[in-house]
Length: 380
Ligand SMILES: Nc1ncnc2c1ncn2[C@@H]1O[C@H](COP(=O)(O)OP(=O)(O)OP(=O)(O)O)[C@@H](O)[C@H]1O
Ligand SMILES: [Mg+2]
Image (cartoon, rainbow, N blue to C red; front, side, top):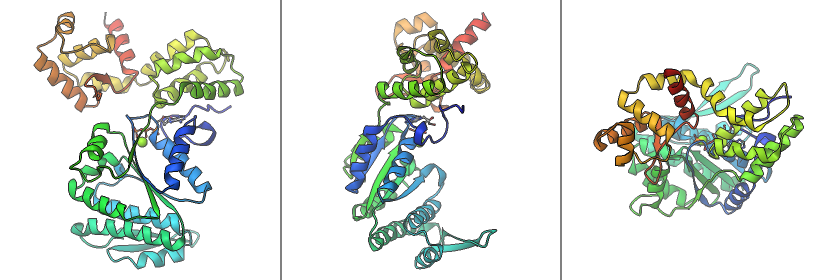
């Protein structure tokens, strides 16, 4: 039987765990065509949730359009993509689609013919870079008009929305807000993982998105439902397991779905022969994963300075330690605080650590501390 615990990509249908409440809440919001800011730390499952939401919304007769801002380096490409995906969502007939696209002023349709003679209509920004923002607004305005004409409710999802300031900052924010506010046939979900960026975008009264819509914070998946999901797949695979032993997986994975899926994926493979799941096997999982990622950790380690390595070792041993405390500095023989601060900043910039909203420094990769502690053992 195929391993049902998928990770790294978009997980759908029977492989998607729980999120029942979050889905109903978002469906409710989209039924009212609201504007929602979806916020969570990385890898908590926003994108998966949004794809499963789109599947559901389409069943209810909505048109859906999804864009990941990461994929568009400039406003020009964002404008073209937004126009493209919204038109595709509302019009499935290619000839009519091409006709619609020809009516746009700042966007030019491109028609290509496939091997089988089928036509595809795409769009690009016809004018120079200065016109990119007006082209984006034209595309959005057009989506609203088309949705009204087609008598369809359209949901536009913009993922990695925290990337927006990479364009030209405040100008685009203001222009987008003004346009979005006028829309009566479109619901918006603007989703982002950079918590502080998203929060300052929406909570700062001087910023354009202030109070444009509600903020929905995505938390971890409910442990009990997630355990039901894991248990029922293990049973389908005829694995022998005690349901209460699964609790440990949530602790090891820190309730981050990406980690939980990866732990379960490995658990499934490790017990493929024996079909026997024991607490000892579960305990082993983080080290198995840390070993799989060893080449990646090795590169990061080689690039770190001696002080940074000492700091990483200390944090892997004491995840809740306070690096600026005297006790910490004496225990690990590092300091002063100013150089610790410089190391922490550099490790955060390189993505090895991240700073929580409360100001603590944590490993971005839950399994890296296991690799570091194994390293200590081999070095001794
Ligand atoms: N409900 C779920 N059921 C099963 N697996 C899930 C679920 N939600 C998330 N995952 C797992 O977590 C991984 C990361 O999820 P996803 O990419 O949706 O997170 P994200 O919040 O969008 O992350 P990022 O902020 O990095 O974009 C997925 O590849 C999948 O393996
Ligand atoms: Mg995502």
